[in-house]
Length: 529
Image (cartoon, rainbow, N blue to C red; front, side, top):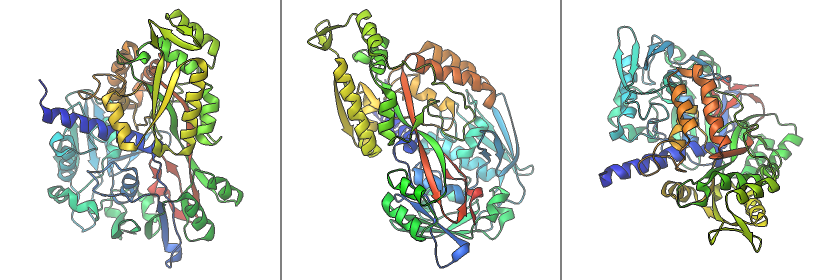
């Protein structure tokens, strides 16, 4: 029997994991820069909301994660093509569930104290220990493989050993901010301060207004890439909650860059402001396959999708700027980049959808589908924080289902309420795109037990996915990508999940140069001019 304490811990981990993977798709944070009295030495980056705690091992808030990339090094990085590149580790190897990282010599924290292999191992083990309840467990450190790290300071080597499957053991390390060991005695003290191992240190924190970072004067001692040392001398992250205000400040020269995705984006484009973009999932249906739900039947799920004009719905959700989805939610940079969607989503064909339901024993009575005296009715839950365009797309979805003969209703839920609804199973269909950095991190949502024992939100039981994912997990890193792609395709083909549209997150910049990925501005790419 599961104790109440353990069950509560599992629910918390499910909620934490879901909050992480939906953050990009549902709550895109703005980040951009702003002019200041320091002129060419300063770039001010606008953030849409206050990050809350900045404690590097204790937060998965998307704004905090983006800011911490400038302050904390990681062992490795992923390039735009998904390949692994050097970070604080100058070399690495992986074999049979064991990864070895060799640190660059001379690494230090911002106070000048050395960053040792023992420090890195201690930070890794802090996250790996469930008792510390770090939300990075499962993102930066394998959640189910019981990973442990050991150190050899003499050779600057950190060795991570797992007792189970961890195919992306090296790639996951890019999500682990490195901290000096003394910070682990009280991680909460870094809520509004830094013990930076990266290129920048926090010098001023005014919650709700701005955060100021200054580039470290010892670039050789930082664990960041050498390119980071050529960035601006000062970064100011300024809270700008409104996109129109962000656009006005950008056009007026008070800020250097900002993320704008709504109607004001066209105004910036017309003014010739350059931008860089990255794709993120925004339109994706999850289905509840618990036995009591009508969506437990594949025929019903396929009919529901086939009855919809997904191209039209996706256009409404993105204001006409979306692109067809090509994957299950692996956000760039990611090792596996195959198209798993094209040809696997049921096409818009109401007649074929009707035939599927008829073949499954459903009959229309007064224009409404019934079976055994039971009306085919579904509730579509969606997050209000996704914005008015998604709300309009949800309303269109419900309208098309009702016209098809399904009694459909939409249920708006706030952010935390959506997580609770999905975890408790109180839904039939959910508009809740899942995005993760690595394909194996999807298995927790599409295999294993449902909440509270696990995080298989839709109670999916797909043997082909399970088989292919197990085969993929036996291979290290990108070697398993063909199998991971096939596994994802099986989920989509069986209509366990239907991704259909991605949005482009636009970062506008004026007077600066930068690159972007799923985490925001790539720190080493930021330059004036």
